[in-house]
Image (tube, rainbow over all chains, first blue to last red; front, side, top):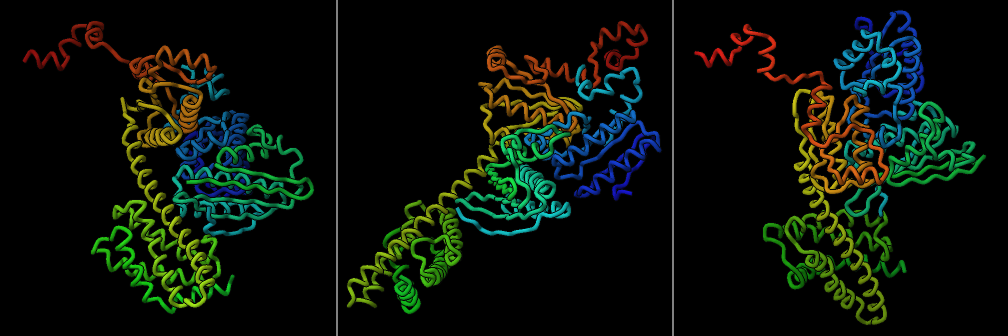
Length: 135
Length: 134
Length: 305
């Protein structure tokens, strides 16, 4: 059982990453999340990284993995609360996080999940995070 | 250019990687780095520290605070006696985000630093030196 | 020559008071005098200088002052030069402040070792080299302090000249004016991203009407800013693309990968649509709604009364 609590809001799971993560914790979180998505029949996963001052390629890969696994289980993943310094550094680092949707905060994240989950005809949009930019 | 202060620490496991981040943050803050500059050097340190643990079999970190006129800098030297990197040029090219972690770590850390140097001898070890100036 | 330098250290210790008086006197003659309010501090600093000089000389290192034995002296000179900058001293006056100690030092050597002319000459030369190094170090600190001051002022100017404005709920605008160098772009990027967080705006319009040229470097900066905004969960629209800029972008083969509009007005229209807003002509709306709408229209009711 990972030390990071996973909360449920309706049919969404919310994870708030507060601590400096090391490998064991990251693996445990991925395992727990996958199990909870199935157990709670979650349609959305929200990962709040507003407390993270550092996101390196390891954490980036973890986020990508979580998004990929969720997709396989037909759930949408949104990462929220990325700090400006972190965003600037990730761009410089060359990490694109292309498999991951992002939103500014939990409210907007929930709204994003809702609009995707409640519009099943946008099947393509759900599979392709970049499609949301096309208006 | 002066070396104002130095510190060494072990980089042997993932708990050490967390400690490396904390130590580098403390140095960067003391050197008066902006938040973005702090974030960049700590992230670069995290990348190389992970490589040292995952691929180098563990090693050490030497942290130095540098001074040149009014400018302050932080220099990090990671060294290990691991298997070394056979093809440095290849290792320094960008890997995929989900694939070759080693590639992105090195090239990414270089992009985040003002100075970057790496030497490696297969069978003997690897040494990475990076520095960031205020 | 360790023996000789220890001799210098011993002499400084022995003749300390004479040196101090001699130096304070030479300062008056060779350079600008410090304010009377700083006279006491000045004497104290001079005393500490001699202390550190003796310590450093005892270490035997006359040709370099970067070692740990000179750390105390370096720190003292840094503080001193910072004070002199604040008091408005020129670089020359700052230098003369330190160089003027040569006079009392040479007098000390002649006085104590007068019979041995060769030794006096050797030690005078060693002392000269050392004091030169100390004087130059002081000047470098002075220059660094000045640069720091200018840097801070520039920073403040930069921050003042990159305003981010909120055009509507969830829509920010960043009108860029002037050239975009690395330093400027950093500040601009950071203030835009901070504002995105605090305002919760999902769209930022970056207007480059006021940017004279867009080259590869400028484009890179823009792309990085836009990528960072997207990573956070917002998006950007470029506006103010002049025809020449459009040509340059194509010629350079730049892939901006962002929607760009000619005017901010067009960009605002796009941003409003994206955020789910619809702009309606009130009269037209009233017509389609019929008489009820007209009689209930608050403005018209007020006009009638």
